[in-house]
Amino acid sequence: MRYLTDRKRAEGKGAAHTGTEHHWYMTVSSVGLAFLVPTFLIVFGSALGGTREEVLATFARPFPAILTALTLLVGMMHFKNGAKMMIEDYWQGTLRKALIMLVVGLSWTIIATGLYALAKIAL
Amino acid sequence: MAETKPVERPLSPHIQIYRPQLTSITSILTRITGNALIVAVILVVWWLLSAAVSDASFATANAVMTSWFGDLVMTLSLLGIWYHYLAGLRHLYFDAGHGLEIETAEKLGIACLVGSVVLTVITILIV
Image (tube, rainbow over all chains, first blue to last red; front, top):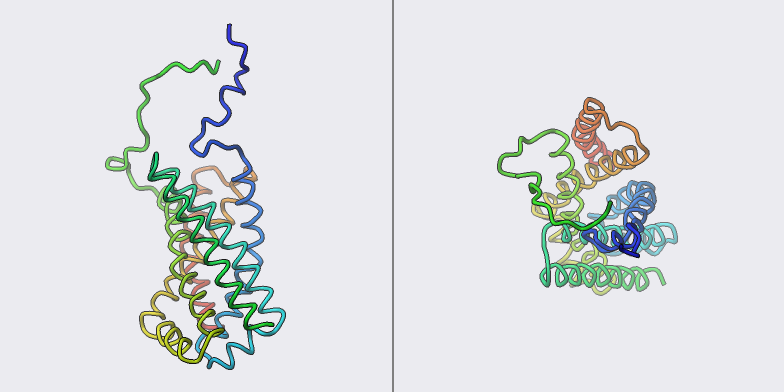
């Protein structure tokens, strides 16, 4: 006679060892990005190809600066979780752990770099 | 019910003998485009940082971004981002419990493939 419930024994046995919060995070961030990305494409696309003065003037304005910061932050967290999911599907053991750490580190480095650039331009 | 008995299960899908289908191809393309976009993100953040730092560094980053190589990466990434965008919307629709019949799913797959090209052309024309 096992005293553990079926649910208790099933928990944490998935590839990611966690529950549904990952999927829910991807759902929430994807809806956020559905609004952010097209707007960002217009702002960025218009700025690309300009002189340095034009680029600085664009990202010094509140709307492009806040939009870019949001797109960067939400986009990179969406990437971090998506890439983690891919790694969990294709790799195992220590390599899997190392690759996930690499992706987490890369994501936060890109966020920090982008926010530093935006702060330097906008403030 | 959930007693853990080791069972010899077939591993699925056997990628070598698995017939490519529109639904499986559009699914894996979502993953490929989403993860490949990291290249564009790194380039754009580098370009933004260089603009923030100095004239010399901006000259370098801007030269790369506006070269034929930069144009190629940006155009492919634009196609990738629109594909991932439409496939993501399709996922939200699937998650809500709709469109899972094979004919509908395949129509949505074609819509993603064609739509991403259309949206890429529109974006290039507008921006």
